Amino acid sequence: MLSNQTLSKSVVEALRFCAGRCLLALAMTGAAVAEADLHYGSSAEDTRWQVSGSIFECRFEQPIPGYGRAVFYHEAGEDVEFRLETLRNLMAYTPAEVTILPPPWQPSAKSEHLGQVKVVDATPNLSLDARRTNQFLHALLEGKWPAISHTAYYDKGRQVRVHVSAVAFNDFYPVYLQCVDQLLPMNFRQVNRLKVLFGSGEEKIDADDMAILDQIIHYIQNDPRVFAVYLDGHADNLGRRYDNRQISKARVEDVERYFITRGINPDMLTTRFHGDRYPVADNRTAAGRAENRRVTIRLEQRDDMPVPDNLIFRPSAGG
Image (cartoon, rainbow, N blue to C red; front, top):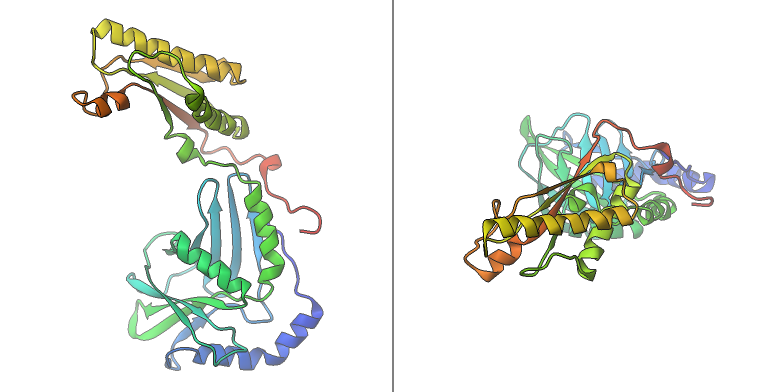
């Protein structure tokens, strides 16, 4: 679901008055460009912001008329990432210029160059790292206009520029922050990489292990798409093979008990124990053996199940 707000009438009227001059100034900002160059981005009159998401992700985006969407994508457990999603990419698949332009009503102000970013033949066509994405957000808060500029793939003599309008950004930024605030602390990929380690001869989880398992449990309890949990116990190769199998069994059963006491349905859990058969590190070193004394946790998720309606983000009153 998308939430939209409309510019106040007074702001629209003021910007309509200067729209033609503003857009002309924007086109002339920075290096001189040929008349044949293409410029895409919302004008002062038609700028729209949209916020959507769930407890798993947030999208804070602006439609780019005739080109696609500029998206600030924020996944649970990750930093925000700027993406350019195109209807039909016109830029060459080589590095493009990343720039922060002054607002069009301040044509004499300087542009800020943030280096380059690769344009790729995929969706999204372009993704910025977290540092420059946050620079984009900061610039928009200041009323500046982020832009991506590059050579057209079909003509090296033509340039394509896509800009993000800052109009009404400050009205929607708090809504985006609301969405971010309700995200889960971790995403599925992060939770699915976790494991707990054991000391030599240890069979029981400790407080640090419980903290790791609690992160996984919290995710399972908030993502109804998770339908199975696989627990695998392992050991290093010190001692007899039979003893190593038994200690790996004791370890995985202790993790299983903790999941059940914390409310996870036992029918979701599958336990296996392998002794020292599947090392992930060199058993000849102490550090390697420490990595091998472990219980790994793997989740399975229904990819085709839509996010339930009660987990969809909705702005609070006044947001």
